[in-house]
Amino acid sequence: MVGDDLLNAKKVTVSFLINGEWQTGIYDVDLDIAHGEVLALVGESGSGKSTFATSVIGLHNKKQTHVTGSITLDGQELIDLPDAEENRVRGEKIGMIFQDPLAALNPLMKIGQQIQETLDIHDVYQKDQYHARVIELLDEVGIVNPERTAKQYPHELSGGMRQRVMIALAIANDPDLIIADEPTTALDTTIQAQILDVLLEIRDRKETGILLITHDLGVVAEVADSVAVMYAGQIVEKASVQELFEHPLHPYTRSLLRSNPEVDREDDELYVIPGTVPALSEMDHHKDLFLQRVPWMQDEADVDIPDELVEARPNHFVRGTAWRTFEFPDQKG
Ligand SMILES: Nc1ncnc2c1ncn2[C@@H]1O[C@H](COP(=O)(O)OP(=O)(O)OP(=O)(O)O)[C@@H](O)[C@H]1O
Image (cartoon, protein in one colour):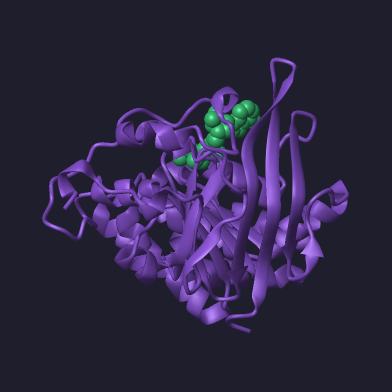
């Protein structure tokens, strides 16, 4: 049912084996998604968004990547599932949409065959039902001439059409959760809006939970119900979309908002965030790592802070204490 727990991630930490040493990519991440909820995970490149998604779906290389903590989907623990069981859960319960459909689709196989193959893995259809189901799926994602598209190869389709096909593949087995990793980044604005509409329609019809990974705050404002802001492998703030846009607290969230011309609400100058996300080897996850990029808060950057986020406003969680005093220099009053 809409609103019931779907995905519960608790204290998820992911480490990578890099040059013989384990380095922490994401640390102590707690995230929940309910049935029918669109949760946006936002942050700059390198903040750990895809690492989180990959650990949910179990796509990481297990020899070089350690995932600890707990990730449950409808109550079932996903971490350290035996491979066969993991493949089943992944195929049946989670659908994945990537940024680049051309890389994800098989260039040598017709669209209809590719969808049929996804259905095949789960073997619930009679032989003669496959074609009908393929056409139905292409129709569901808004493809106008599904019979024709089923007979085409990926390179014969436009970017928007290919992304629709990816969504058809992702929903082929009626998943409870869709993970969409930058699904519209490569598309122009009109097509982007259409693709997001397709996702929302699916959510409405099937009560699917959606983890939407994006660096685009405009997309978040348009489609998400709630948002988690990630920086250097940690969640620094989470709240409903409306709450977060109206009362952003963490310095990183405020800097992101003020650096985005589309969503900046006030009439002030755009802010350029200096520097970049630190390398994994330079991350001390017991500090508020973003403060390294706030020139006027260097004293606080060295202070250890608790791992737990605090509930600063009802259902609005934020990390550390810098949000209490943070102000942009040109706004100090
Ligand atoms: N398999 C891996 N081995 C080593 N380091 C990794 C691996 N996967 C990710 N990383 C590192 O972990 C950090 C987070 O990367 P990740 O791709 O999750 O970030 P992201 O927020 O999704 O960025 P983008 O938006 O560019 O995809 C980066 O420093 C990246 O280099």
